[in-house]
Length: 334
Image (tube, one colour):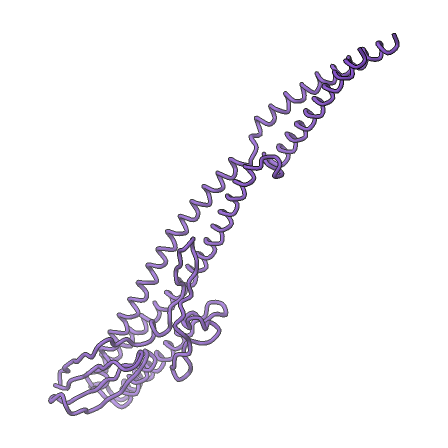
């Protein structure tokens, strides 16, 4: 009889311990708001939650990369907008002076403005975002162009990862924006009958030859690599009233402006891609957060209901344990 009572008491004790553990678990879930507070709570759920957390973390890093790239690209686009405006003004100066009818004072003023525009181009080419030069390729610690207008950067494209296997360049190479591109030789016949040859040199160099109407006799020649040098030559031509050079430079000003417009269009396309990618990353993060919540968050109303049931079971078990103990004591005394 005593053995049977002991077995019954042991069963009640085991049930008490189990329900106490359940009550502790439920209270912990309500306190933390999490269904999973340690791996042993749900091994498979823990693994799934880890996958979702990794997806969220990587997505946040991609989003940060995209935001950083957008900032850099928008900054470069703003600088190149100023370049476009300065090129427009430079062409206006050249057109105004090409007729050769300007007074000495007006011509000197135009030459001085052209020099100032040259310096403005140099300043824009060496724009910095924080401490980094944005047009120097990988060499972001050095100015893109030196005081003699020679390119000091490299051709490195700074790519940023904005998703798995998705890279977007966030910089512009200085020679692409400020260098001059002459793919093939071109000729332009001027109003006075002279013929201007635009001949590609090495790299971004263009050689300009002004020839007589026979297209053989070279009357003048000059060369340049970038808009700073081109504007400097224009300024000198303005000072000396060299209308032939001024007229010859008009075409290269148009070409340079078109080149900058193309670069700005590319930057705009990159910004659009980054905006779209940012939206996709935000959507993916939200989906992962919802999935993570479904795996590890507790249903508070269900947990509260479970606590009420578990507590009622505990009260019943305590009553049963008391009866068993009393009965066992009477059996022993008899």
